[in-house]
Length: 385
Image 1 (cartoon, rainbow, N blue to C red):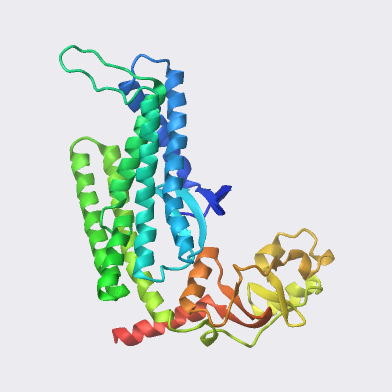
Image 2: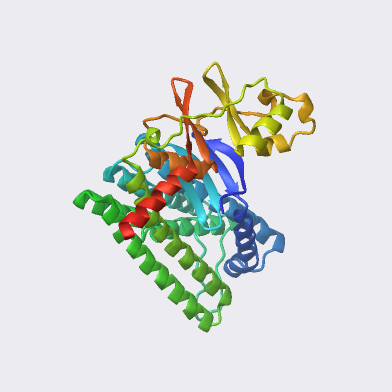
């Protein structure tokens, strides 16, 4: 999940991406609205109208999710918390933060910004529905008549209601939902212990997950297998995310006090940008058994060359290292005094196993994922013993 993504555009400087899993939920929403909800609310219309309504509603739904996450992202940026991207995926959306909130206050306002944005969006869609004739009336009991409204009013009413549900659901005090993060922020601020606050909030999250699974079982016995599957999967997702956050916080507590320089290796194997790729393969990849090497010229880091990139080349005998290396951008470089928890998070986000440690542009070391994981394993063995 969140591996196969496509960047659609940028909004306020944030990349807006779509995950491959979103396609499944988009097709499901389009089909259920166009063949189920809209024909029931607005009967006796041409089927093409229902499909157009479904398409507009789907776009409005996607926009609602993006705006919800944008609320988180804008407030996070005000607290100097970089946002890597806003991504639509099967369970909604996520604003990927590159570091954790620095304080309980920051956690609170970042978490609550999303639901507040959803309420604002709900009001906006409600106003649009009113302009097009208001929400459709419910069937009048007794005379068999159904009052109808314009298709636009039906769509905007649906989107207004959807955003209200989005805000209410996210404010459930169950981690990792926004309400759970608000709860964690309050507990963190009261007691000053982030680990304890995380455990309590995650406990509420696991409890909520159990309720979702129970509701799934009820739906299954009531003859709604599709709904049962969705509630069951959502319950598993919430439980996994809640417990994963506890584990992640344990790792941060272990690594955060230790700077990158305490783990980095200073005995470096580097390559020159003008080295032939054939020599790189024979004398480096087949000799040192690393999957990547820093590319350095006069002590300055220029980039990193990967075995996977070399493999994609058609004529390695004609190429130099500079032709196949990746630039030394911020995803690959880290400062020596940065805490190691941030280094680990950077590796996970960018799918890297090593980061280049630089000081004033000069390469001074390399920090490897295996060294961090070995430290955590040793620490766990000692503490469990």
